[in-house]
Amino acid sequence: MKSILTVFLSVALVAACTTSAPEAQAQTVKSYGAVITADGAMSMDEFAKAIAKSDSLNAKVACEIITSCTKKGCWMHVKMPDGTPMMVKFKDYAFFVPKEGLEGKKAVMQGYATKEVTSVAELRHYAEDAGKSKEEIEKITEPREDLFFLAEGVLITY
Image 1: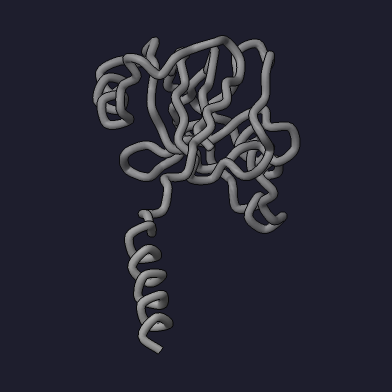
Image 2: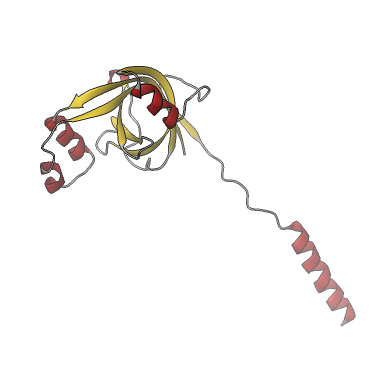
């Protein structure tokens, strides 16, 4: 009986000593478009302050993706510091990002930002691409001034 108790306590002691903390999940970074690095990327707060002083800006920005085009992956929205979306398109329509699964993912993008007025027709087109309902699309009745980012390259962390 004493030996059974000794074996049981030994096994319990070994089990307690060999448990480890859960391993951190490995993250994968995928590159789209021109090859870029994350080095020197400004935060969205820094970007918002810089673009507020200008009509355009050449920049490398770290951001959070809100959504992407569900039809082709030919655009994405990223979150500005105030929560509003900024439209990102891809230079020369030369590359696309995944059509789904990007919500909340972190990205670094390099390119050129501008302030532009988006027509009602184009806003409705984007809403359709994003899978919005007919009722939501018909509510779009005014053009809107937006920030646009023409990305040469994008890194997305999965």
